Image 1: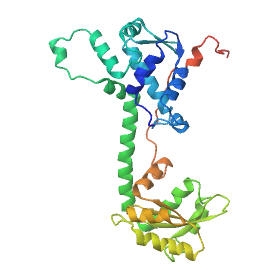
Image 2 (image 1 turned 180 degrees about the vertical axis):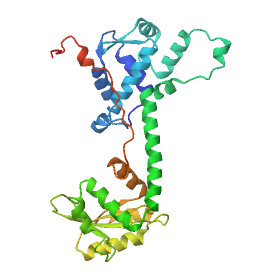
Image 3 (image 1 turned 90 degrees about the vertical axis):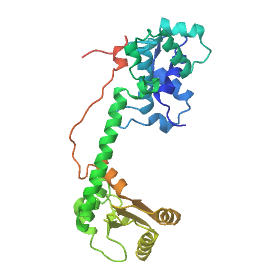
Image 4 (image 1 turned 90 degrees about the horizontal axis):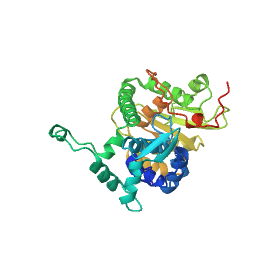
Length: 307
């Protein structure tokens, strides 16, 4: 299943603490990951900024909401239900869902004045999903998406020769080709049979990957172009190839590439821009932010605080 949002985790976290005992947030995360039946990959998935595991982040946001609502307290990294939380338990069913939680808190809020009534309401899900961490993640994704669009525009404006060199630079940054010098000698020199060049699959050169680089701004790459590339691979007695374009591939082209015995990797303009950002090709870092959190282990009584 997909990793649940913080608003779906909040009731489960509250139910977990209903025994009135203190629990470490780490224990809560492990129990809740089992409750939501997360796979090993989902448990390891990180936030877009890469600084924290995604599920851990959402459990912390659910914890923060319950703390702000007065239902949980957090001391030295240990969460415990509050008196208000116990009051909910005295009138609640065995399992509390998000709707019950929202209704109970609504009853406990002070009566609104006319001025308050005019303010737009904010849903529980919005409160949880608009946490500072969530806003940072959303902002990062928007900046990245805008950069991808701008980068792809630049790629389409460059010359065919520059595009070939760009492809070499990217593949080397990704771990192929050994060095820029080795790769640069290989690409753009064969020019026959639908192949623009070759590059080493690994630094030792144990296998060769054949490359087709098409800097087409608008024209879509179709099945005929992929067939020509495969024919060229066959002529070289090769089985592996990378077809890179600044444009797009048709569905037929992708289906054909996936249905044959040759290993053909298709990289369109959007994927190319993403790879360039991931491997710092054609982009530079403007700002770097570190998102920090409390180290609960540091504040435990048994922590080693010696210099």
